[in-house]
Structure formats: structure tokens, C-alpha cells
Length: 107
Image: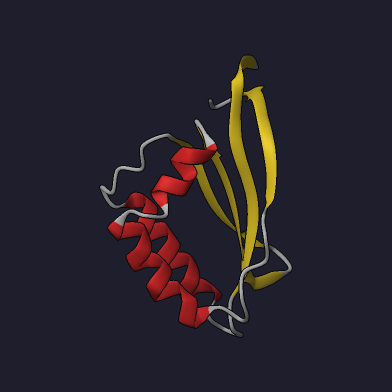
């Protein structure tokens, strides 16, 4: 059953890995969200692959607030994951799509 919530901060993004590095990039991202890092305000962080291009990693995030997301980027564990991931990227990440999450399942 879908439920209505107060507006949340959402992001859709994609990262393009260098050829053949998609699995390595995904492993770094998966490790960063499964470790006991504690990301206050994070309601959902999903990581997946483009089925047509294994070097494209897709990310969907839902946060209580935009500030919670910004604060997560200051966490040592997140900064370390970014440091590991950057050399695997094929260029700079593109700006993600920001969306206002109004409700649904899983929140």
C-alpha cells in the first residue's frame, strides 16, 4: 500500500566507469553502503547496473533533507569511497537528477 509522506530529497544519478571497471566501481559503492558507516537522514540508497552497458552504475537515493545528503559527503567513510572510485571513472560524474519525493512504498 502506498503511503504519503512529507517531501524528501531524492537523487538519481549514474557513474560511467572506464571500460571493464564497472564491477570494481560497483563493489566500492556497495562496500561503502553496507559498512557500518551510519549516514544520518539516508532513507534509501540503491545501486544498480545498466543492463545494456555494464560500465554504467546507476544510483537512486532518498534523504530526509538536502542537508543530510550534503553532510554525508563529509563523512570519512564516504570520502574514502569517493577517493577509491574516482580513478575508475571515465570522466567526471554528470550532475544527477534531483527530485522531490512525495511518497510511495519502502519509505
